[in-house]
Length: 464
Ligand code: ADP
Image 1 (cartoon, rainbow, N blue to C red):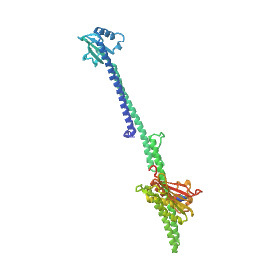
Image 2 (image 1 turned 30 degrees about the horizontal axis):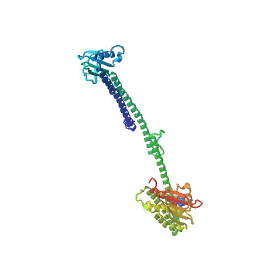
Image 3 (image 1 turned 45 degrees about the vertical axis):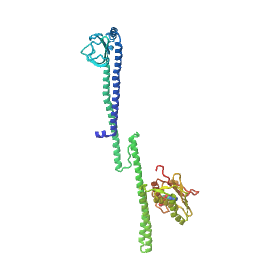
Image 4 (image 1 turned 180 degrees about the horizontal axis):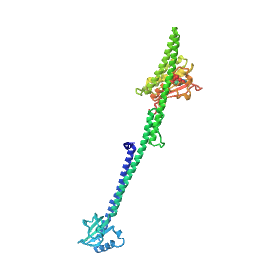
């Protein structure tokens, strides 16, 4: 794996961002501690120096010099006393009492604390150390100096700065290592996905992206892609099935036409028989053309958009269908009934397509109903809109068949003897889907449950 590829991964950049944020927080935290310990501690020292020097300056010089002698005298606990220094100097600069050998240079007697760097050890070769010092002139001209060593504070500052330096590098290193590790893992999985995709593209549609089972983002993404692949596979299978169905359903009428023509050719001397054979062949070819036209029509409707929809009166549509189909029903000795509510709510749709769907439903009802039966077309005012209901007293459709009859070329075994292509209800379904309407099949109205009820529910779908 090339190095730049690693640095380009999202996880590496994320880790880098995290480590930078982490470092910034660490630095800010340590800076805060640094501020608290140095600035605030210096202020605290200053407060003591000011109060102590003020209080001392109010005492008589003799008492002050005695107290100073006691306070900073040499002896036991010398080491501890090395933090505080005090000195009372005569106006001439001579030390009267205290542990500061001489008046520190550059320290003005202004009663305000200053930071100085002084050699406080008895050994003059010792390194100077930082002190906070205050000098105050007494009424008699003497100068009182109080000092506090800042060496401890300095050491603490050094420790904090070292902590910043020492903690930052490992923290950054750790975060970057984690980033590189995560990126390598991510890249490995991306590589797996690439390889699987390549196999799928080369035709192995049963391949699926690997899942680790951790349920992480990658797994979720891979599971989603796998679902898409499943669906694509299903659609492809369906498409293959449709292709086979089309071939099969065209082969039967075409072979019939071919057989008839062949037979006619064998008896070519009989002109009447020849004409009849040609007529039948034409009928057969019309059937083939009808199937092709219906298939193209379904395809066209499925890709059509909802543009051009207008409000329509469902009662008017039903009346037009009744005008067309009542005479056909009568011819076959089937009673045709039309039931309309007084003022059904309008529906939104394409007039021609809805007429086509209704014609298919009513046409089927008449086709499958035996002589003496009844077909009814009803418009029902539903809560949110209108619904068309087509009832018949034919053989009905078994509940287990109801979801299949809308598929292309599906024909029930019961209806094999009736002419048809198995495409009418597919067309109805395509038209309903285009409108966002639902088509349902219910049990028939006959007492023995016979007959079919088709409901085209034109109430707008909740999502539409
Ligand atoms: P076709 O009528 O050309 O066979 P359709 O797609 O219109 O094709 O119908 C598919 C199948 O559904 C029919 O073959 C038949 O089995 C069944 N079917 C449709 N309408 C009815 C009905 N009103 N009564 C009984 N069966 C029906």
